Length: 318
Image (cartoon, rainbow, N blue to C red; front, top):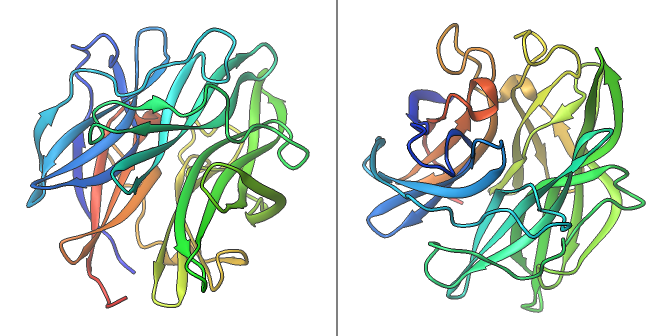
């Protein structure tokens, strides 16, 4: 596999009050004659909201429209998302769009806590309304500190019933490093019959190793008989300033979506020698578009430098 980088597409200008900085965790969503890209952005209080831009499907570097309103903002005081609502995964479900998102709330000892919520759009993705004011998934006996940034896939069982699958981030501990609380998180698995009530067993899909202390949002897709997962990963020490320890793109394969083998050397994309993605590459989303696969991803500063894209060339028949 080899990805061809095409450059940065968009970063906020700071002209919108809810979108002062960051275009984080980009997600490509086709919309008729345009390609919509949802992302998380931040206001002056560093609180996350969900919004989007639309790009030319024939030239993804050309932004056609910048939405001037948030689609989903922080929740009420005391709720799991009172400090921000960061998008993770969008699914078309009949005539609705389901958004699985990460809710943020502050922690005195660990900076923040996260949970997974569901919001639904019935106006073609312009606005999203919380399906519940509480989280679908929160910390548990299997997820000690927090859960976040799910990838959700809906498959069909042999009897025609729906089989929902989720790969999500699970924070298992916090360590204070250089006087700062640093989270350690891996990728775990959950499944559901309706996309709302999820069963967890603590099964780890992609875990820690001698370097990996944290893994960014997974993106999973089927390619023939294989499940393929891209993600970002980093060390826990000095990852904000040391390029050798910071986020880069990783890759894993599975025959069943449960047991995964890492092959980071096959990811086919690396950080640039200089420029917007030279320090970090993270939070990618991969999807098919015009007989290619497209990777949207963030660069330096966890999305502060905006998002860009890469292409993987011709796709095999699936």
